[in-house]
Image: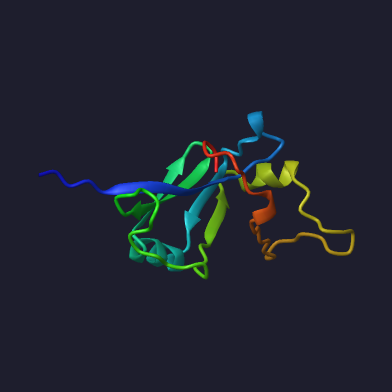
Length: 125
């Protein structure tokens, strides 16, 4: 008797920047927050780093679709974005929102996903 544990890709998360070849920002590092690591673990999900960013897989029932643990639509996954070479990023990226709202040391910027812009391609969700 063999036991199979099935995982299906929930999503890929990529960081793109037009400065880099093919737009793939290889100097960026994505990692889940401590809260998200707990949510992933409790939801039987896996976080994996891939060349274009990261991917999250979820454990499924035998139908390969139904989540083994359903966290529901209210679950929020948050990731930290860090840079291998921050000075290079700041040299090629304008983070200022306007002349009166300039990015300065100590400020934070937040990125969110736009469901309307989500990929419908099953090979690159």
